[in-house]
Image (cartoon, rainbow, N blue to C red; front, side):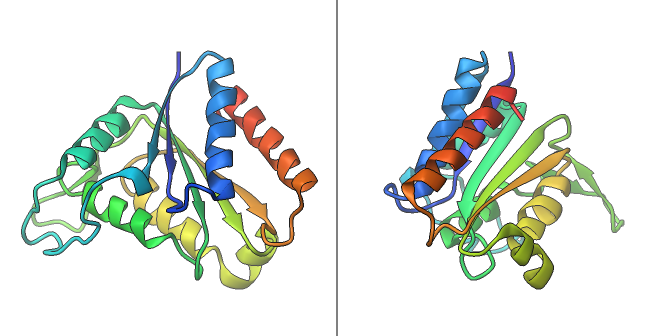
Amino acid sequence: MKKILVINGHPNRESFNFGIAAAYKKGAEEAGAEVRSINIADLNFNPNLQFGYQKRTALEPDLLKAWEDIQWADHLVWVHPVWWGGLPAIMKGFIDRLFLPGFAFQYRENSLFWDKLLKGKSARIITTLDQPGWYYALIYVRPSVNQLKRSTLLFCGISPVKVTYLGIIKTSDATKRDKWLQKIKQLGQRQA
């Protein structure tokens, strides 16, 4: 049985992203996966990596539980909107505080290289946009996806990482959103 963790980075519980996360979870559970969820907005933590990597700030209980869930999972599903080309601030803070040296990766002594501590996991990024995905890729070169996929997940050993773009959100109607939710539920059923 595949162990899947759905991580929702949208700070607004009334957002379409919460429906996306629920659709994926429902599909995966119907297919027999064990699924846990993290709604980053519900966690009680300071998103500021105050001292960078110079001094470790103790992790709050919600972050410790989130890290246990990340370690438990075989497959991570990240759901988030693109705001100003990037991730919501609370999601960036979640990553900054958790994906630390000694947790997600480890720099090698006297070397430019590092050890990837999250090998053996895969991921899916589901991102919502107010533009078509092809436009985001062609014109803006996918900054949020590059940040999350290449500079975080692949850097820490999570591979493969697949991406699903949903957009244009602001002009979508109920029929279009229902089609997207069915597509996401099917991804969950395939546990992809």
